[in-house]
Length: 264
Image 1 (cartoon, rainbow, N blue to C red):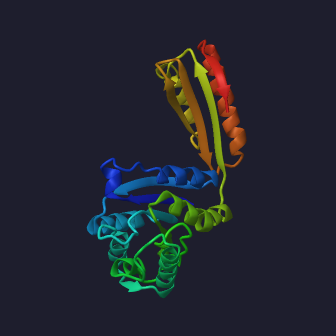
Image 2: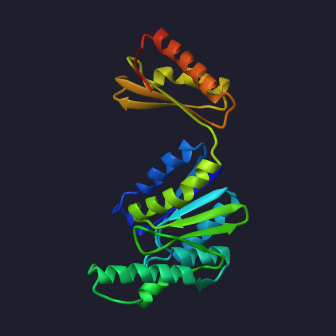
Image 3: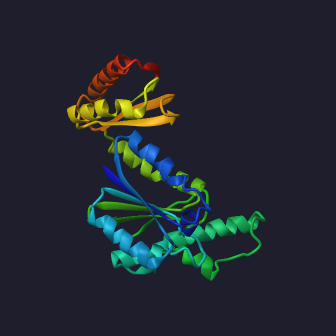
């Protein structure tokens, strides 16, 4: 599948909060052989959310995962922006309402919260775009949301990492596994020659193996340590092809008097 991520939150854009969610999800998406084509981060603004959603849907990814902005405060605008972008109304979802009410009642009875009952702010989280399926949030109160628009499955998850991870693992991971593809990854660390010295050889290999991504990553200094990574998605005999490319890289490094330090 082709997948995109949309991260929403002013706190990310001002550097107050580090976006670890996209990194965490990316690792699990590619693990099951799916292509993550784009990660977009935007502010908490209804118009920006709406327009960005429409732009993403024009690219017709198989799946779009959105995080952030599902809470009870005035600046949690994600679902309003999504509804506007999809030209759908927001409506009270009774399943979401009941789930949120149970969560707050439980917290009140345990003494975690001092305010009992459903306030206007708490009820706000149960208004979902038409056609939404609420997703249980076992780590918090705001439910996740599942939508379908054309060929794109849309999942809206809370921005709080523990809540996002719980819904991702319970709902999205089984889908990734069921529709899994093939992801190939090979890595090699070497020393003694710099990234610029091996660059022309890597370019030739990329042309020879166009289905593979062959990239160099300087790790320490100009030539103290450089990593070469080879990745590919859904290639027939991908492991074999990547292994062959890696063998050629190894020979090139040795011919340039480099030293291979580690192979993963």
